[in-house]
Image (cartoon, rainbow, N blue to C red):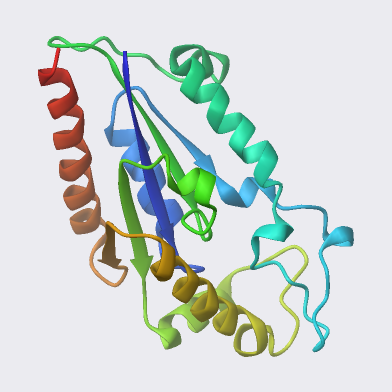
Length: 201
């Protein structure tokens, strides 16, 4: 049994969740762990000097719980998939390869997690498109007036700078390209990684 851990990161509303979900649907014996599932309760998220909730930082997330779930998959991916009712497939050639797709906006900023990735993809879109998409989404709690320009975008730039200073080997993807084109490129790349592992048997 071999494993591949794929990271799909990127800015808010950049298309990372769509890509991760589509990738999971295309790749046998895969599953997705989404960073957004690990936010702390709103009551414990700190507020900055402008009165904005500081969601766009690692301290706003239960990263210990997320890492624990990832470790559970790494120890026994087959059992992890079965417990979640996900389909298992036996390859016609070579050993089983299990693929974990980790998706989130700060996955490459957390060193213990970043070290696990075999493949890293980062979805990016221009400021104006990101702001427009964000304005059409409904969040709980909702974004207060001025939140995007006063907090979300500055934190994205800061987090991206930090990521680029500590991580190499990231493939940047243009989130304005057709979804099918992005999926085909990433799926082909990951499939080659899987095939190379199977050929080592």
